[in-house]
Length: 244
Image 1 (cartoon, one colour):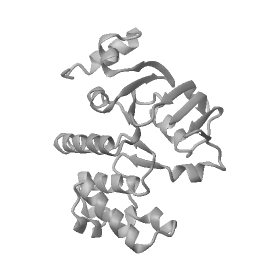
Image 2 (cartoon, rainbow, N blue to C red):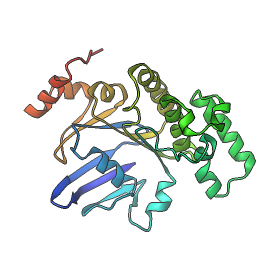
Image 3 (spheres, rainbow, N blue to C red):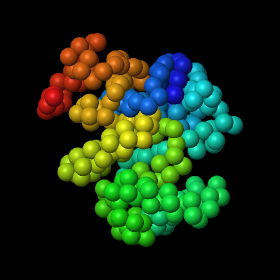
């Protein structure tokens, strides 16, 4: 579904990604894990076509991402960031249907999709008439997920979508988000720095350090068979994880 070939990205003297090659399997959740500054969010923005690599290339569903192809490809991707990224001057409903309106969807199709997604995300329809500031953090993230899913994208890009929530709301949303991804069979690329969250979501876990991949594979391999000392230190630093 997503293929990165020797992708490099720098910001001035800082090299955010170093010749990263990665394949993201269709219909699975791949988690990008690692400490702050390791290149996780940069990688996600490159896949979304929001920034351009200095070297290497990225393909989504076989199509090379370029400035010319990126706008159409983004319509095949849903993007959720921490705290939702909702436009504050628009109601939740207006946020959710923004791209559908732009693409000229008829009112009936929009109304049906809204109803379906409100049911899927367990968000009461009357909440959609509120502005983001009138919603709780968890409700804002449900609205952001509805917006990301509205065009029925092939790929979900999730940049620490639950990172700003308190633990109880985060736990509920983790359950719901994983169930939604699996129910819809979506290909998901999720960024987190939290080891337990990586294990909860990830079919494949990719651990980055200083812009390079240091280990990728199953979560259990990461925990039980670390490829190098850094992997072991990273796991031990989050030793509160309880393995099932």
